[in-house]
Length: 257
Image (cartoon, rainbow, N blue to C red; front, side):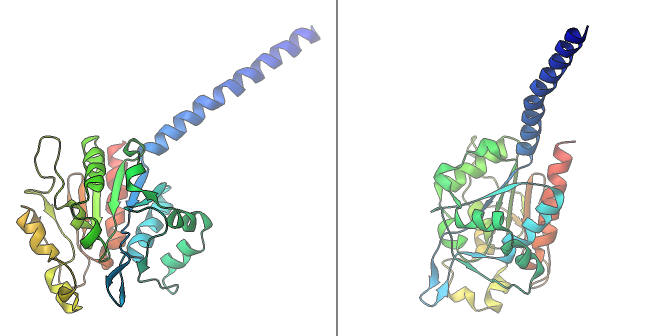
């Protein structure tokens, strides 16, 4: 009898062990459904004496929201590796929390090259602002392909500040523009002129979005504005970053309910 009990116990243990991978795989699949691809610029300089790249708080504030929601993310860039950034301030709690997190630092140090991104791993893509996107997001076929694939697999496309520059020329598989007749926002012409960057950028973002058929919306200068049009989510400026990320989280949660 003791032998029978031992064998029975062993069988139960083996069955329990065998069940673990299935549970793990199910959990991994669920997490993949909510994983976010964050894309930053690789531009070194926007002027001889000015760094290009991305605006750091437009990365760290959304990541803080994603962390609180238990959402995983990867970071990608046109060139891969460590991209230049501006707006770094450790007095900003979100930036301090990001910078003191080894896993987060590792992700920005080793960003995935756009050509190596597997879009099947992501439920959403977020295009981070800063002035760099005005150069290396526009007419970037690899980025356009990523945005299109994620959108056409029921994913969420989002962009903040100058990030919408990466949406201007995105075409869906049917040849239609992603943003034509869609409500969105981005860094405004008035905000650009207020910082004298209108003399540096290669084109005016607001005008380019409107010329592409988008229905541009805006808040007063440097105030938060987030626009949600179905699975297209945009934020106007750095002040919008947290609210923008909260809209992404809400969209992901509603999609999986």
